[in-house]
Length: 293
Ligand code: ADP
Ligand code: MG
Figure (cartoon, rainbow, N blue to C red):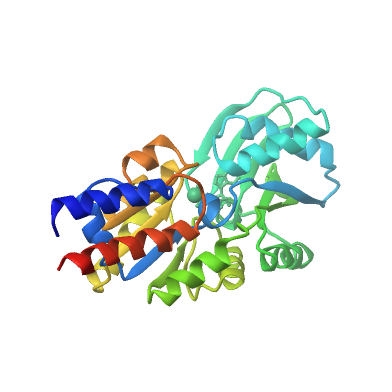
């Protein structure tokens, strides 16, 4: 590959909204065999919204939401934003939290005047021996089948509410991924969310291979595992969580809407969150190297 033709290709890609870091990144991009996509914010719009609240055991919605908002204001997780928004819409004020703890990959724990609250996923409630009854499990399963993320709430060791959060799948995701499939790429969906929700999303966009329930540092380990299996891996992500996995991948791809950390660790950046530009970036890199050889 001549430096000149590589420069031209990098320039053309940039005009189309794909920033390629350098010539080396372009060359590696031409060899990608497997594209790993983060779910939240990459395949989905990253704008989660509360769509339902189911209270049990005499808990009432406003008390639950007020407690949830009080704890979640300490968190920077995308789910926290949507929960705070729901409380704001009802003009609920937040109260002071003590003993706040963030449990990575699980949720948050904290004490309010009225006791201890747990807000998070199944793992968090299991870790505190909170039991879910059949009716709740069934509602939870209905939500995950619709690709929603269930947030479970417990108060003083008793389950009190299921909050369903929906984060719409990007409208262009399915078409964009089918272009990647036409290029012969193997597709993998990687998510910190639960398996059922991740599976429902994967099914809607035509991805067969799902790795769910992973912690941020495990994302990186999964990239290495795919590389050891002989894949040349592109990892597409948006969040701070994804930076180590982007760095570990042969080609780290950041979405333009993502965090600065993600963009800094990226070999390729999609200036707009148009997933179709992924296929374009790979095609352009391949065509450039083919022409020069
Ligand atoms: P991801 O961002 O890919 O979902 P995380 O490791 O950040 O991965 O979170 C994994 C899961 O832990 C979330 O899907 C959610 O169920 C739960 N969780 C994490 N943080 C919070 C929080 N602040 N409030 C409620 N649940 C949370
Ligand atoms: Mg994410």
